[in-house]
Image 1 (tube, chains in turn cyan, brown, blue):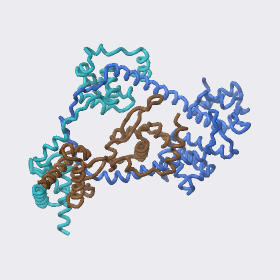
Image 2 (cartoon, one colour; image 1 turned 135 degrees about the vertical axis):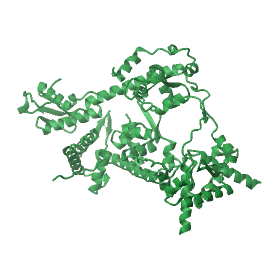
Image 3 (cartoon, helix red, strand yellow; image 1 turned 45 degrees about the vertical axis):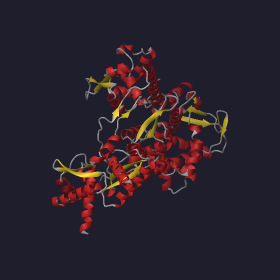
Image 4 (tube, one colour; image 1 turned 90 degrees about the vertical axis):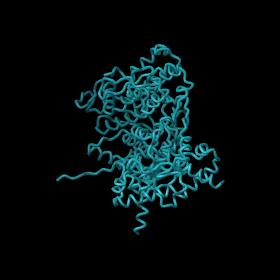
Length: 187
Length: 187
Length: 254
């Protein structure tokens, strides 16, 4: 029975190390398991030995006064290869629509864009900012001081524009429709 | 020598699975290792068996058409105790029903979902999109160009599904009749 | 002594109907429509008594049930729509909707079970790989004209959607609709159903008009006469109200 429970505790330590972002102290592991620190330290040593001697690609390291799980250094090249830069070209429909709104309505907030697109634009805006096509240009003087977005120089270069004035003119009809969407409610 | 290299490859697969936040396909692992997919699949099966049968707190799961490493469910209570309680507010009945319809009827519009559920689904769809379980996948070629929704990879992972085919079957009768009434209500 | 009243909460009219059918232990293919309609309306009534908002969806279903009930009480005759003969049994149509909804409700339960099980698996925390994504050409093949067209299309779609919503909102007001009907009757003494609705009525418009008439009939303000199956319903203003300007006609203005 004693052995059984120790094995369970060791598995639990393993699960906790796996799920953690940074190093965990033996004390915090002991608290979570409600067993004494000495036992946890013994379990941690067992785990370190087990991984070191096995053919596993993983290991437990003692670092910064705590313990952390990671990959063995000899396999790091595969891990890196896996995360090789993904070359992404093109814009998704959501990103294209969001960029169109920012281009013609800048500076504008996410709420302004959502009013026109009718859907949440968080991830589309993030992707445009990541691509360097849109950027934060200030804060709106309104409750919550929401971020205002605008296009970047990279945006101009990517579309072959000299200035924003080179964006094609919108027809009168579009301005009338915009009034319908947000009827002078620009408080 | 041959055996040695296979063991190395298995350890590398383990390291890659460990480093990934989401599921990895056998093909992408094979590419990183520059070995054939069949071998990788065999290694993955070995790893799944090894973890399942061992006293480890970890396991390899097959989900969303790929493989992911995670903690065994029986140790979840310790993991949760260690990290701030993950407020995993479950999905409301409305959200679950809406998700069920999206999963089986994708791509589909809010109107399609409302026809089946008989209620407005705006807030349910928003909550599913916010949680990353459903997403905009395009626009329907119909008046007003309504948004089409579909499920995400996170949906598959969260529900432990490999593909959408793993979902329970809809009763045959309902299926047939759905097709009969669908065209009539399409206008 | 105060006491607590508990009313089960339903996901919508179909959920409520299924509950009623399950409680009565009747088969979906064999809906006792008169009885179920009564039960359904009784539930809506208790919601109102508890000051719970009765969603529009529940009212639409109430109207559907009454329509189905009326049709089943009449001898069967085919409906002619767009010059084509439809012979859909309305109860059958309702049964199919219920079966379909029930199937998805069951799948929702299955999903919940799966999520309970899978929610216990801990995954590695997300690590930001700063260099993981590199954008060679951030805009791909998109040209500035695409942005221009896209913006116009978005604004147009949105304006259309806003317009639809405004029309919709105007139509679903029951008391306004009742006021309009009364007003028209005061002017002309009688009218027919088809004149109260537009040429291409929306489902909501039909339902609200129908409900408004039912309510006016119930209050004894209006008399409804139908001279044959599926003939137009004629409406007459009841004599004691004719000519009088009632103070409780909330909307007697045009």
